[in-house]
Length: 131
Image (tube, rainbow, N blue to C red; front, top):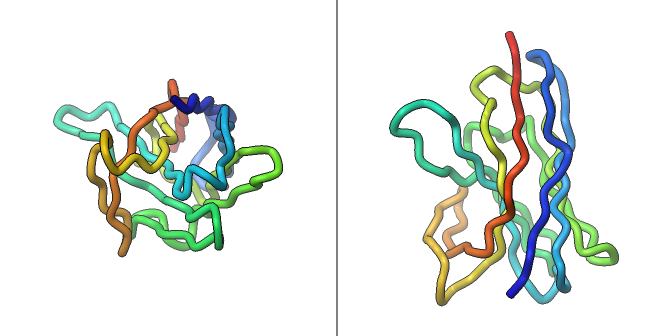
């Protein structure tokens, strides 16, 4: 079973930037798709998809609320997926997780025009944006 470890979270002011990393214990190329998700602390907030990347061709998909601000990228040489977050807003405050495509055991998410199942969640990294 793949293990994913996120890092790079922190506290920034609105308008600032952060770069999150997610390192996989196995080949990211073989995982096919890797995604970033977040869970905010507001009551009733579920885990929502932020961005996903096809680790073959690099095709990326984004949730509408991050388009133009966040960029997902990957480096198969080091089995790592990144999320570069610019123009951060207080409403981006959340725990950010990465997960791997898992068609048999995963939970279904829709991220932009992409739909797929994800599992093998990392422990998460906290992002806090102050106004």
